[in-house]
Image (cartoon, rainbow, N blue to C red; front, side):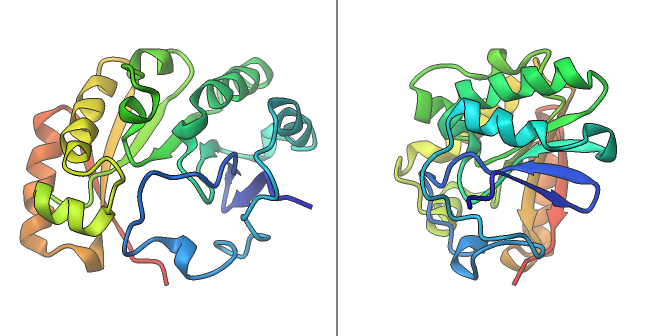
Length: 202
C-alpha cells in the first residue's frame, strides 16, 4: 500500500510524486525508504487526485497544526494537483496553514510563472537555496536544468514574496560554512524572505 499522507510531529505531509529535476548530493532519498519513521515513500504509481483526496478523508485535520507538501519528490512537478488538494484542505479546515517544501524550480518545470497560482492557498513556501554561489549550488544540487536553475530558483523565491505570506530559504548546516550561511541570510532578507539553517539528516 502506498504512503500518500504521513504524519511528522504535528504536521500532515503529502507525498504526491517521486519525480524531481535535481539529484542533490545530500538528498534523504539516498539514505532509506522513508523519513522520521514513516512507511516507505517510494510510490508504486503517482496517485491520482481522487486517490489523494480519499487518503485525505481518512485524516482528522483537527489533529494537525500544518499541512505540508513534501515527500520523496518535488511537489511542484504536480502543481495543479497540489493546488487542488490545498483547496480541499482549506475547504475542510480554513485555518490550517499549508506549506510547500520545494527546490524552487517550479517555473522551469512548468515553463511558466507559477507563484501567482499559490495566492490564497499556500501560507508558506520553503525553498532549498543550498548555497549563495551559483557554481557551488549547481555542484551540490545537480539540476537537470544546469546553470539556469540557480537564477530561476531565486526569481521564483522573489516572486513568491508577493503572493505567499511567508517565504523561507533553507540551507543545510553540514553542507554550508557559517560564512556561506550569513551570505545566504543576507540574500534571503534582500528579497523579503527569511533563512532557515536545516540540520543534516542522516
